[in-house]
Amino acid sequence: MDWLKVLALAVVQGVTEFLPVSSSGHLVVGKHLLGLDSPGLRFEIVLHAGTLVAVCAYFRKRLWSLALGLLKREPAAWKMAGCLALATLPAVLMYKLVLKPHMGTIETPAAAACGLLVTGILLLTLHRLKDGGEGMTWRRALLMGIAQAVAVLPGVSRSGTTVALGRHSGLAREAAGEFAMLMSIPVILGSLVLDLAGGEFGSAGGVTPAMYALGALVSAAVGFAAVAVFMRVLKSGRFWMFGVYCLAAGCVALVFIKP
Image (cartoon, rainbow, N blue to C red; front, top):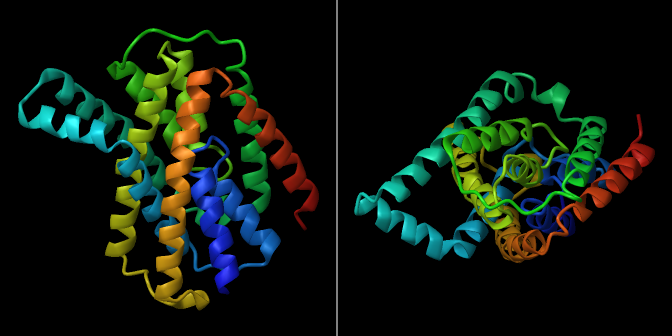
């Protein structure tokens, strides 16, 4: 892998991690079309580390407020922390039971393209949905957690599915968007811990430590901008338009993917 390809994948990751267009789908298809042979999840996890920095930086005030609330034993803060923990459990189970043992058969360009089509259809259902006015509940947290678990599959957007289920359950746009972003923090952090514990980092596949550093830096910068765009579009009520892109991307990917 050369520097230009590292930069390209980092930009793709930063743009697509938070926008509802599936970062995994774009990375799988992108590697296929660019002829890359990346060392499994290693490079993707490093890029996720960059996006983890991005989302923490964007919601730094909310995270600080939540941390202070926990220290002061405020009921609202503890409920939010509990909802985030509950929403994380389905993704953990999905990873252990489905993704980890069947990685080679699930993470294919064709599967990613089909996942993009599914994401597109789901996002289009938000077109005429009115803005909700209700806050987070245990039930909504679990529903969004299940959506996040399904999004472990390539091509299925994590942010898109979680926001869609949150909105259909009655959550307000901004509340659904914020919770969807905060949900990503424990999942990305957990992925990093698992990868580090497995000792999978190194220069295998031609990816050097310097390339890892560049990928993380670029994905963090681009990811921060993507979170800002995500929240702005969601508040505007035009979030469903990403569905049109996902449908188009899925169709184009199916056309150009070589069997």
